Amino acid sequence: MKKTIILFIGIALVTTSDILAQSRKYISQFSHLQGYYNPALTGYEGSMIRGFVRNQWAGWEGAPKTYFASAELDFGQLSGQASGDILGKNAAGISILHDQYGAFAETEFV
Image 1: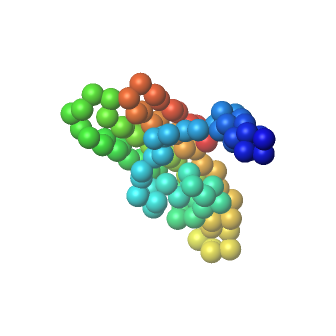
Image 2: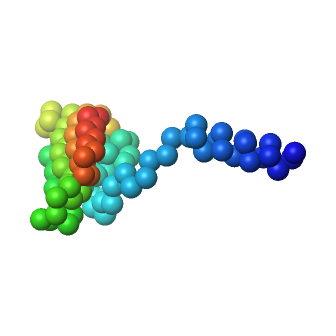
Image 3: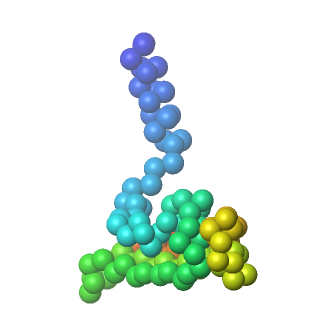
Protein backbone atom coordinates (compact mmCIF):
# COMPACT_ATOMS: atom_id res chain seq x y z
CA MET A 1 0.00 0.00 0.00
CA LYS A 2 2.82 2.38 0.91
CA LYS A 3 4.60 1.73 -2.41
CA THR A 4 1.40 2.38 -4.34
CA ILE A 5 0.87 5.75 -2.65
CA ILE A 6 4.49 6.79 -3.27
CA LEU A 7 4.20 5.70 -6.92
CA PHE A 8 0.95 7.65 -7.32
CA ILE A 9 2.47 10.80 -5.78
CA GLY A 10 5.56 10.46 -7.99
CA ILE A 11 3.46 10.15 -11.17
CA ALA A 12 1.29 13.08 -10.11
CA LEU A 13 4.36 15.28 -9.56
CA VAL A 14 5.89 14.37 -12.92
CA THR A 15 2.70 14.99 -14.89
CA THR A 16 1.98 18.35 -13.25
CA SER A 17 5.50 19.79 -13.52
CA ASP A 18 6.62 21.92 -16.44
CA ILE A 19 9.25 19.95 -18.38
CA LEU A 20 11.22 21.81 -21.06
CA ALA A 21 13.53 19.42 -22.86
CA GLN A 22 16.14 20.72 -25.31
CA SER A 23 15.18 24.37 -24.92
CA ARG A 24 18.45 25.50 -23.35
CA LYS A 25 20.34 28.17 -25.25
CA TYR A 26 24.03 27.35 -25.50
CA ILE A 27 25.66 30.75 -25.77
CA SER A 28 29.17 31.36 -24.52
CA GLN A 29 29.50 35.07 -25.34
CA PHE A 30 28.65 36.40 -21.87
CA SER A 31 30.31 39.72 -22.72
CA HIS A 32 27.63 40.27 -25.39
CA LEU A 33 24.80 39.24 -23.07
CA GLN A 34 25.71 40.99 -19.81
CA GLY A 35 22.52 43.06 -19.73
CA TYR A 36 20.40 40.01 -20.57
CA TYR A 37 21.75 37.72 -17.86
CA ASN A 38 22.28 40.47 -15.28
CA PRO A 39 20.21 43.63 -15.86
CA ALA A 40 22.19 45.43 -13.13
CA LEU A 41 25.12 45.61 -15.59
CA THR A 42 23.17 47.78 -18.05
CA GLY A 43 25.35 50.74 -18.94
CA TYR A 44 28.34 49.31 -17.06
CA GLU A 45 30.65 49.91 -20.03
CA GLY A 46 28.89 53.07 -21.24
CA SER A 47 26.44 53.54 -24.09
CA MET A 48 26.65 50.88 -26.80
CA ILE A 49 24.79 48.68 -29.23
CA ARG A 50 25.52 44.96 -29.28
CA GLY A 51 24.31 42.03 -31.28
CA PHE A 52 25.16 38.55 -32.46
CA VAL A 53 23.79 35.69 -34.52
CA ARG A 54 24.22 32.01 -33.66
CA ASN A 55 23.52 29.56 -36.47
CA GLN A 56 24.24 26.07 -35.19
CA TRP A 57 24.28 23.13 -37.62
CA ALA A 58 24.08 25.39 -40.69
CA GLY A 59 22.45 23.74 -43.67
CA TRP A 60 20.20 21.40 -41.68
CA GLU A 61 16.45 21.93 -41.71
CA GLY A 62 15.19 23.04 -38.30
CA ALA A 63 18.70 23.84 -37.04
CA PRO A 64 18.94 26.04 -33.91
CA LYS A 65 19.28 29.75 -34.64
CA THR A 66 19.56 32.62 -32.19
CA TYR A 67 19.47 36.34 -32.88
CA PHE A 68 20.24 38.87 -30.18
CA ALA A 69 20.39 42.67 -30.18
CA SER A 70 20.69 45.12 -27.31
CA ALA A 71 21.09 48.84 -26.88
CA GLU A 72 22.32 50.48 -23.68
CA LEU A 73 22.25 54.19 -22.95
CA ASP A 74 24.28 55.70 -20.10
CA PHE A 75 22.67 59.03 -19.15
CA GLY A 76 25.89 60.39 -17.64
CA GLN A 77 27.74 59.79 -20.89
CA LEU A 78 24.86 61.27 -22.88
CA SER A 79 24.96 64.55 -20.89
CA GLY A 80 28.71 64.87 -21.54
CA GLN A 81 29.81 64.33 -17.94
CA ALA A 82 33.46 63.40 -17.69
CA SER A 83 33.31 62.78 -13.95
CA GLY A 84 33.38 59.18 -12.76
CA ASP A 85 30.81 60.08 -10.12
CA ILE A 86 27.88 60.07 -12.53
CA LEU A 87 29.05 57.65 -15.24
CA GLY A 88 27.45 54.22 -14.96
CA LYS A 89 24.97 55.27 -12.26
CA ASN A 90 21.85 55.82 -14.41
CA ALA A 91 21.28 53.82 -17.55
CA ALA A 92 18.52 52.24 -19.62
CA GLY A 93 18.64 49.30 -21.96
CA ILE A 94 16.59 47.25 -24.40
CA SER A 95 17.26 43.63 -25.38
CA ILE A 96 15.64 41.46 -28.03
CA LEU A 97 16.35 37.73 -28.20
CA HIS A 98 14.87 35.40 -30.83
CA ASP A 99 15.60 31.69 -30.56
CA GLN A 100 14.37 29.11 -33.06
CA TYR A 101 14.75 25.36 -32.78
CA GLY A 102 12.89 23.24 -35.31
CA ALA A 103 9.20 24.09 -35.20
CA PHE A 104 9.56 26.02 -31.94
CA ALA A 105 10.36 29.72 -31.70
CA GLU A 106 10.74 32.03 -28.73
CA THR A 107 11.06 35.81 -28.79
CA GLU A 108 11.90 37.86 -25.70
CA PHE A 109 11.81 41.63 -25.39
CA VAL A 110 13.35 42.98 -22.17
